[in-house]
Image (cartoon, rainbow, N blue to C red):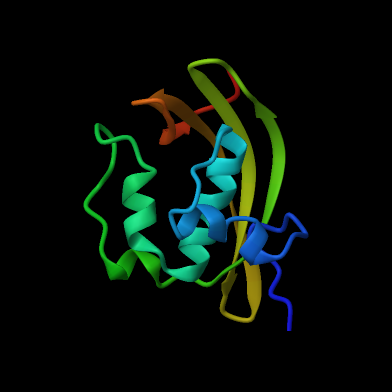
Amino acid sequence: MLQLCPCCSGKPFAQCCNLYLSGQAYPNTAEALMRSRFSAYATGNLPYLRKSWHPDTCPELDADDLTTQWSRLEVIKSKQGLKKSIVEFKAWYREGDGESALHEISLFKLYKKRWVYVGPLSDWP
């Protein structure tokens, strides 16, 4: 059975974020990186989360950070720049009998020629 990608792209996982999570490729846009990070949270890929986080802002991560059941991703808007980019999204997760969402405007920067997650912004700049 075909497994769709957790990032909600509609593509098969093997042809979408798994290319990044398995190390076959690296995202060439901030939105692709953000989608792959959602998939990493959804599938419990801690090494990828560390690798895709800016070293200056990456917290100590362990398996306890991966206990949330992420259900779907909604990209609201994305602004791709040359050295920094911004992506606004809602990441939906299961909580009790319902669903809740994490709404974030995220900053991404080029670091050593790769896009990395820096952290949340307070609002769209």
